[in-house]
Image (cartoon, rainbow, N blue to C red):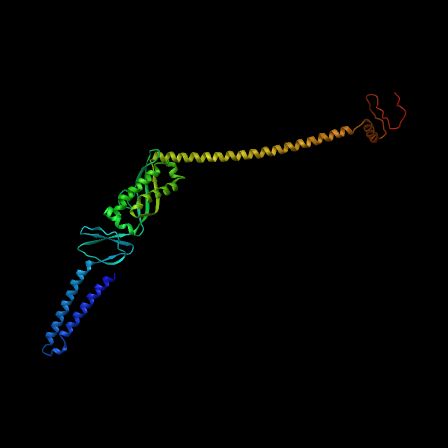
Length: 332
């Protein structure tokens, strides 16, 4: 950057000196007769200085390269030196246009979208095709966000000799397919669609990072966007889910009935125990009562309740009560 400024400053100084010399050469001291000729000479010198400046700019421009922010420059030696291992950072850089070439590479985060539809990613069909553990064919729409390590960009270019877009839809796409096949090929379709989807994504991203790390590619995020299986398989999975839901509902209902029956049984056992306890208490009371009743007590109670009148109607001998303390017996 400093060398480029010095070069442009030198060109500006040269143009300024040329203009001053032109003004001094056709100065006022040339006299009245030479006025017209002096003015013409000044214009010629100005035109010549402008032409020289233009030529210098045309010569200098190829020797200056500007690298955009978020990019690095790869220095390619045309004389057979290969690729410079040190990349150029953002800004102005001097170069020899005859012997070197600079290839600009992005280092900011990029997202690769691989899908069947032509509205995302590339215009063609970029879906990923793999097989499940049952051997069923599956097609997946995925996306991956990644960044390039600036220090490893020269080695990346030296390996592939092409741009990032071509690498993404070639090598990176194949790495994604291989990683997905290793993970999905060990799982059932129903598991991938259900409880193991997050695990499949995590394991695939780890395998991807392992494959891309030697080339300076850092995987920031991997996403499984859409999952497609044969219609018959999807119908079977849907039916299985419905049956599982119905079975779960029936199981919940059964547990509810069992809990209710247990509650009723506990209540019935409580009532039976209460009745038994009451019956035992009543029997105990009757037993105690029966033990306390004697012949004398019965006669005494009958005497207390007799009003002294004889029965008006009788069908046989009238029972006679023997009062306590009476020594006479009733006549026969």
